[in-house]
Length: 453
Image (spheres, helix red, strand yellow):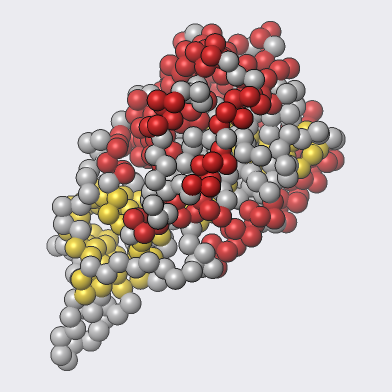
């Protein structure tokens, strides 16, 4: 959803193992973490672990009985701590100012779901080259929408040939996925999907004028914000598809309509979507925030510690409420819908569907990094265990990206991980107890990544 109109690296050195006279310095250039409990993301747990990093990759990982600390390595004593894979935020709209905030919360990879194309590409390339600090970026480029488009920078398509050309452009720019938006109807989505399949490009959809089951059967890879689901549950007679001719009218109508779903209808759509193999990126934090835009008590609970003051002011929440035409009755209706949104996520997960955590940051009340942590908490409240919720932001999100070296910790894998002071399996909030963030082998103190007070 779009609502908004590597300098010098900070390294942490805990302890260096001295080189003994006459012994080869085999650990030179290596970083080692010792004593932690490692949750690998694959289901296995390694206690009293030794984790060795070299050149941005995990050289060795195992128990202290099986893996020796090389002489001369830089050693980080992690006894009494937990190490988990770096987090992946599967739905963001990144900007340059957001990147350090993501890292501060252990987000080492983001999936950008659409923005100003040239800006997003420059940002991705600057991070990849080490020119700026930030999480690894998988980008969509500009969103593809039917003309006339709503959001600045979106690619307008009017015909099947326009849709095919837009797909080809995303291949040329090296996009990781294609993002289609709310006004794309079946007439445009079908040829777009044909071209995407031919070019082996995954398609992420924020649906409006196509229901989720139709989109999934056409081959859409992921449903952003659970869009199109309530339209599929309530059927063509609901009038919801037509409402999406206007962005806010369609979004608000769908948010209200979730309260009308019954369990049988939700289960029917779950079964169809799981059979089609589509993933969902629920962005429950967005749905929660949308129901509390005028709730000052809720706004005060939002973690803004990694937000620059100028970015907070730019949110201009009262203006968003005005533009969206929201009333007190709308907020009440949106909050009544939340239990059914949670129920859908729970049913989809239990049926074996792929759930990937995304935040929709940095849209209003969704700060970079912090809102992904809130998403994990909401997934637990929806019925997932803490370990299952953590999986949605690690291995599940990596599966969505088709990135087998992310989201898990294994030998030869990328060295993206977080060192925690508390066990996230006991309380998902413990994912926020971050002692160190390691991204591609670089070590960051999360406190240094936040703006100065």
